[in-house]
Image (cartoon, rainbow, N blue to C red):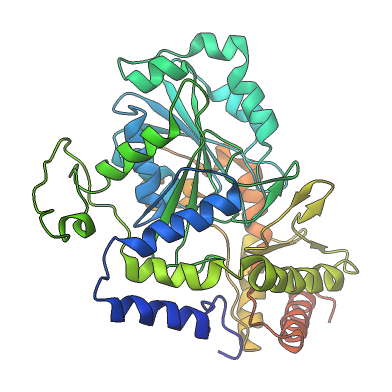
Length: 407
């Protein structure tokens, strides 16, 4: 493939950081993980940040902490990657899917309509790097009529918060801005993904930014979640390795969700140049596409910038107007013939077998299907040259014109 879709950004700084870890003799959870948590916390203005082995694990850990369990409901958008819903399903909750808006993000009014006394959490998903409308969502969850519906269990966290927990699935939006605030403090808990295709990667990994309101002590929550991510063990392996530090206890039936240092090193090599290089170069690619496609009536570029708001430029979900799903697929095939790899984000969850078998029906989510049927994700990454951007643009224009009959 002449132009791949999403190769990781690996430069000498990243390689040197990983090499330093390998030479240190310590590769599992230790000082590099702590450094990564510190860097992300400072960037997002969140003092308490926990790194784990995936964003899926992060979502599961947070919901488990909040006491979400069988019989409870968790509201999610129908148009997201399956992990958002699977995390809730894995801890026994019922997933309540709602439709999205034109900007691909969850519709706040659909959230309001879906809330029942069984609702314990809402997971809002920042799509392609564009943040949800957190002011609207927070206002709904704080509304007296909504709060009256909340039926807390005996879980102490639910008793303290006394409302539905808002989790931001910010897997796509590290560095995005909403109301002049960087993502990380827009919800009670924010989860970032550090998967191989994300803006910053640790190959596999996730991060929990803890932003609970008073009377919660976020440092205590960090300590609890960290303990639970290490099998409920009172000492991590690094602490146990110190002279005389072998004795430990298991105080909770926890999980194995910790991030190792060798992976954290990958992220450290990238995150220190995130604004100056990675985000800047993604913006360049994104803007080149938007400038090129604005002259075509069939093209709807994704949202990326308005006063006080900015995307993280994770994906470029181009919408080709007035085509069918089958025509969109034909466009993708023709683009591929030009040596350009593109993708579709995402197949709405109600169209996937595991969710169809559970009774979800795509006909209940018309906006999600309408967006999906015309969506093509174009490659966006720092290494993409201006010349390669032109190749992508020309391939898309040529393919669309052939399919809709303009050629």
